Image (cartoon, rainbow, N blue to C red; front, side):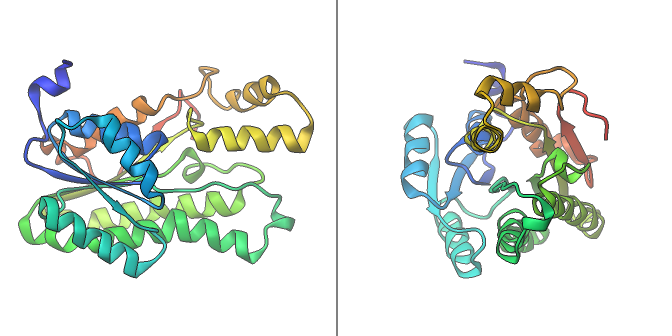
Length: 263
């Protein structure tokens, strides 16, 4: 048993993790439940959520609530289910997201809207669902999983960059609104991270350039001064720190987890 599990710093707190069925979301759910939280996994694919709950083990309190975070009614129903099982939400991790690349000239309105809906509107809807009870009870932790694409620009992902910049703007503005309420609002900004989403990006590079997967990996790793991809657990540990009761002075921040990319 690790040190986090021994101290149980999130004992009796209820955490919701969107996009919790795989990748960064799954790593976050694991570290939060090991820290003592009751965790609700949200995502579009019920089978992925159930698989993640099974992976976390029967000893941990985990609830699955399937929802498309771009749909207001689905979000409302999922949060109602979460509250019914584990009570009010103390920690919200807005992790659900999607990336799709295209040159700006080929970024049609459909692609633009998808990137905004999943990466930005989903954060808005889930935060709307969780925030009122946090303010009422005088405690809450909201952590938005943004991206280094929300801190700097990358070519060929203008819609994704715009959405993630929006997440950071929302984070900063809401942190000011809630500064005296006991609720903190922060963002973590991973660089390229070893997840299924990264694999999709690599596949796209290979298909468009005709180069090898090794070439594609090396090309993306050059964005990281450490010349490597970030591991999901590294992002999860940053989220855990921001979720702690003792982290009350951390709010309105966008923390880069990127191996030293210059912002």
